Image 1 (spheres, rainbow, N blue to C red):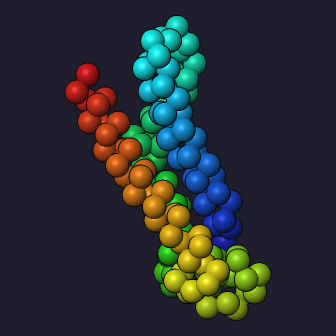
Image 2: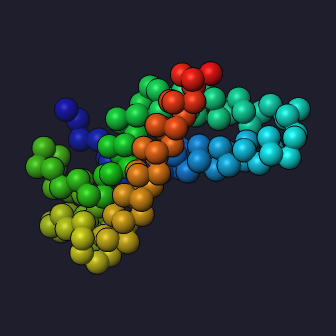
Image 3: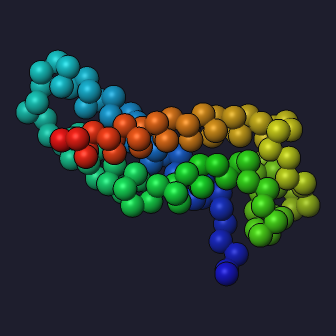
Length: 127
C-alpha cells in the first residue's frame, strides 16, 4: 500500500463528526422552537448521517482514534507522536505529553460518535 499521510484524514474525520453533532443540535433546536420551514439543516444532517454512520462508520471511527493507534503495520513516521513532535523517529506514546492532549479528546469524540451513531440508527429504523 502507498504511504498515505494519516493526519489529514484524522482532521477531516474530526471536522465531519463535529459538524454532524453540531448540526444535530441545530435541528433539535429548530424543531423545539417550531421552525419546521427551514429544511436545509435537516437535509445536511441526513447526508452526514448517511455518509458517516451508515456508509463509513468503521473508517471514520478508525480515523478519529488515530492518536492512540501505535500499530506496527503503519510506518513509524505516521503516528501522532511524530506529528506533534515533528521528529520522524519519535516513539509512539499516546499517553505522554503533548500526545495525551490530542488522544483524550479524540477518545471522547469517538465515544460521542458511537452513541450518536447508535441513536441515529435506532431512530432511522424506528420511523
